[in-house]
Length: 321
Image (tube, rainbow, N blue to C red; front, side):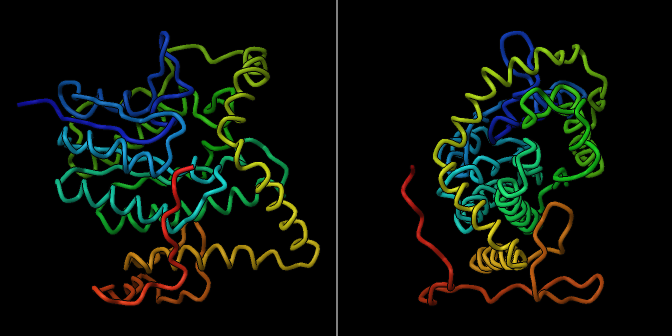
């Protein structure tokens, strides 16, 4: 019997940033690979630091499909929220195409909703709020599309692990070894419950000592600052405008309008794909006006057909920045 074939797609989280081994990164996906079967999986990590949903669709998806994996993970979207070109419609379209491609191959798909970077970095409220709103929108879309395509979805946006400093690396954006191990164990649990993992679960206890406080401060003052600057250099002017808008709404007592607008954008993005909005869970946007009885699933939006008029709010794909 051949080993399980596991391919990981995404950004720095899946690349393994925060879990250094030797001169490279290991990460949760590599830890998970060792427990998928009685023998180690055939593991290929295509994740690249800084990747956005466009990169996963255009650069990582083709080689992943060619490998015909048994299990694939797709964790991406945080970097999209850190760009001035962020548009939840395009995020939803790209993720839907990626998920659907693996569903057609019969591949077991792993997805997750993730914490927002503003909160993890400890940014002031007016700066953190717009980033949190964007990440909640991404999480809502990921949750809905995971249901649509039968993915094994991990709710990792909130919970004790997000506030436990022992789980996180010096940059506060990526898990440390403990955090990566927790993600690996939680994904292993999902796969085991689905009858798709037969090997032993990864160990929760770290193999290496965590960085000292002085080492963490030095990283933040040098490489960490440069890392954040590279990820946010085109967002900062827009983020300052968003923060100013946040403060104006707070002063007027109308902050709810910002959440309402974001929720309507998510609803329109999913409607364009004929995907029902899921019940809200921690880390996602509640959609105003959505009423269902307890346990009832929302009805799908009307299916689009050739020649149908465009869905209001749908926007053409922008050119790559």
